[in-house]
Picture 1 (cartoon, helix red, strand yellow):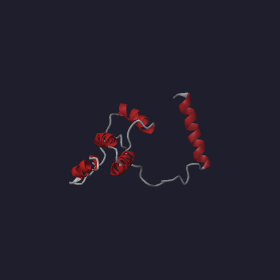
Picture 2 (picture 1 turned 90 degrees about the vertical axis):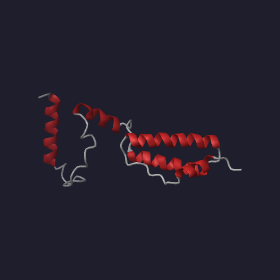
Picture 3 (picture 1 turned 135 degrees about the vertical axis):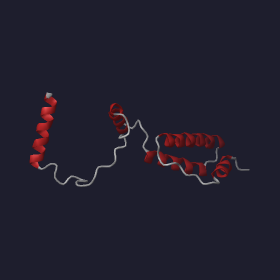
Picture 4 (picture 1 turned 120 degrees about the horizontal axis):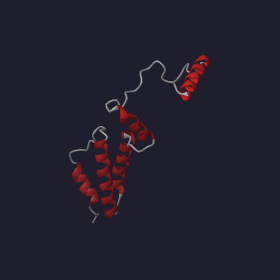
Length: 122
């Protein structure tokens, strides 16, 4: 056993005796499902570190950004900026599909709406 493990175990025992683990938030409830459970063990730690550091997309943040781009498209007048935002929307949608998030649901008449937004008003 390494010295760091001995020190950690000692501190955990001391915290238990002092009652620092009593009444923790979520106590008695099951842990959330492990999103890395299906990954090989040697990849899990790297995945968790990258996710914690913000290098792996969070589904909630992607949805928020997709909604923001949708709203922006509704109000943009500049055709070149609309085109840029449409490209961004396409990239965000692909990223959402890549992380395996819930699919982005677009209305059946979405394409005509986008075309109408991209055209410059007469």
